Length: 303
Image (cartoon, rainbow, N blue to C red):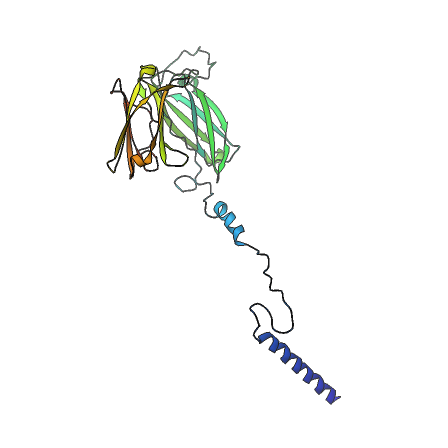
């Protein structure tokens, strides 16, 4: 009995030694165990985890998707985009961004900047902008945007609602319920347009080798008008062109495509365009290398 137990323990020690030796013996090839075990050296189909992470990273990690105010203090906000100058009869699109969730409503009010009285018997059938009728009022629904920064817009026809030429107006946007937030902006509506030339924000052509400049023309000279355009860069290079005007069914306009090589190198450039018939009518604006205006808010209208 004692001999059998001795033989048993001896066999256990021998087997254990063989197993340990097999585990620590160097393999004949990297990743292939030693011994008679046959392991395929064909590479496994790659299991990429990193591409999945990098796909999600731009949306979930690198962008700040919190509904925070522009000042970063976490308060809700409603912003009104800059409002350009308009004339009686224009349809104005008021718009902006907000931290309020999509589907929530924003209350909007337009009211005259200077108080004008009106008879109490006057029927407010046009939702007028006058003080005595509490202004033009409406609500809009917030639309979904990116990263919780949602959008809103509102169109108003100035040929209605008792808008008065050469008058200033306030627009107010509010909402948020218990976390009430409000913002106000000022704009003007003029009568008959004065003679002017407009300059839209420059745009790159699709290949970004040239700049497209364009605008409206209201000089009273009709199709006989020609414009003198001068572009100069901070490197001292300058080019000039004489541009004819065209008619698009609603008025006269101008446009031209200028090769960037004509003014490079540059950090910023200036554009001066005047009426060839009446040089006092013109517009001068400066832009950075990326076509952004040098000053905000940008006014595309000549004085």
